[in-house]
Length: 222
Image (cartoon, rainbow, N blue to C red; front, side, top):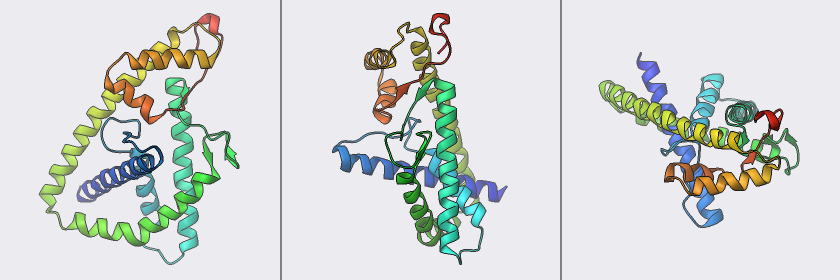
């Protein structure tokens, strides 16, 4: 029970750090705040899952930095690939696309992002994680449970709201009868702009999303 609570806190801490990194990068790049990620709250779960995967796979053996680098690339790239795949299948849109980058795999992952994954994995294992471990261990067990339970409740609610928003967008995509994906995309963007900030968040987080048409358009399959 205690281990589960501790790792739950690790997950939320790294999810927040990942979100913070994404926001800072976009702030530097575009000179404005953009709430990154699929969820509404300030977390990017893919970072949390990625770091937990690295920590669990590596364990206590941190003697081989090259192995850690390669394991971090493998775990994070696998996560990014399948997150892209399942989000596309669920919501009929490609939310990011690396097709124009060199050395990509189906536009879902590319060398340009894989190498930073490895570097960040090494930084986390050698510098960040020891600090996080000491920080969490300094929190009384009962308070860890309170924080973990509260964060998990908020996380579940956030997922429910976010999936509702994404399903609304998906439904709007399915209503479109045009065959041109770019025309559909413009219509969807106009529809998003006419809705609440929850919908605009998705547009801002994934500004280059692409509509994916599946099956026969005459049969309204998309």
